[in-house]
Image (cartoon, rainbow, N blue to C red; front, top):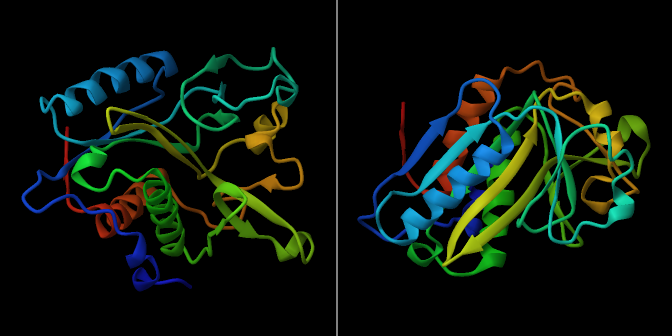
Length: 235
């Protein structure tokens, strides 16, 4: 399995002396529109120097989101769940219970104003998190997100386990990543996830890893600190 040294090239630390990134875990299910409003406000405050950087972990009720590259034909069942148009990059994706969404609000000017490097760091974070559960996550040059090989389904088969969709304003990032822990995978059938038709989706539990959300959160925080720097827990 990949170790920390395999991800050091993707390290995305802030300048020395920067405050730790606040780490906030939401209880229950978070309304999507309220989450977007919160991110908009917090990202503006970070850009103005009025608030520290933040990683906000949430779960949403079942819904679909459309990124800036979404194709209408990829919305297979438009009446199944609410559909939210959003300014993040990417295409259609699903959010719902059992999926850990991490909204990442970082000041890229304090790190490096390079979007490719930032996305690579997010991928490395997800891959390192999966590695804590002995799952080999992989990146693909032609597809954003994190993928796992599925030899049980056939030699050439792979499934997506984590998605990435970001937005940046004034060099402050928001939106972020989603990791499938134990969502209802049938809910993905109402869209073509991220516009990819040749591959499926999976989760930690689907791969035979009986893990809880708090266990995933702890692994995510450890891996985040290895790549992005220290955090401090918020109530």
